[in-house]
Image (cartoon, rainbow, N blue to C red):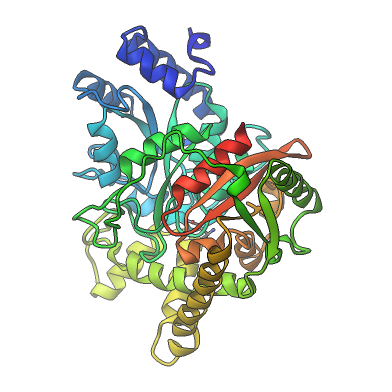
Length: 469
Ligand code: GLN
């Protein structure tokens, strides 16, 4: 039964549903049986939403995504389906509303199959900071899927049924799992997709995006969820491109290769794989030039200061009064808040709240938070300058292949943060990025990062398509 749907491309599936050649009830029966098997083995879901999927199937409005299985990162609110953001403090939180991107896919007939595992509130690069267990890499279960959208990445790689994942990135959370699991991951321009209904981590950085087994599937879902939303004042009004089938003439493509992204801290085999792919593009007519993003070395300190500062204020609402976990009301308010937060927040969340509060405290604000904002502007200027000359920039996605859990355990928090050395900077700038599979190293996938100018999703998807053949 499972065999029938295994390897079926999303577009073929959608045609089959439309023409009624696919029995949707049979498909979802087989799909959930498979998801439960995967869940036991790899832990990709916090919640599997079989019941609400069948309710959705009964009242399907039809549309461009009619019948399509979509998994959703657990920090995106889904009406009637628990949304934990990977935290114990939201373990029982069931939103009474859908995030805008969810209502959009539902209106097109998309079916929500469950909520994928992530680092608590997005705090991490390996999904080991999840309160619901870490997802395992399907290629080698002793290794991480990456993070923070680790469940989305692992599931996309492991599941042979047609499926698309909706995920989110603040500082690399789509690219890292895409790279480590060997799938495609698009982080859209900041503001391209409404953040309404996203459990915020750092509001000036959070971006919703899409992961899939190929570029076209990403393009399809992106074109349905992008666009201005009156409920998110930071969403962009620019017209949404038709991303599906985007093409590019390689002979007219100018590729910049930032030398700062090929430093000694990046694994040699990974660099070789990326260069081999760049050379191929060059042989097919693209113009390739090395270039510089001179402020790259400051991106990790700037990113973490800004991200933690914003997180420390965004997380203030989780205090046991308004959302999520509560305890018997006792003592002064401060005592009560501290008790709830002390009990239910994880170690990394506490670390970030403390550091973020410190960085924006009177007396330190100028030295840390405001300085980081200035550095961010310099990084943005570096990209603006580069995109005057180049259509895309290319680099490895991650500095190493998916690490083993036993290796991650030994990392200090700062070493952990430096895993974002390639992804922090484009995320700070808010530009769109696509991670595409690019060969293997030691049997594990290598990801290549294609960075584009603001709102140039169409260009990077077209380049990704060229590479995937
Ligand atoms: N690893 C980065 C962090 O811990 C980015 C995570 C994310 O994009 N949510 O903040």
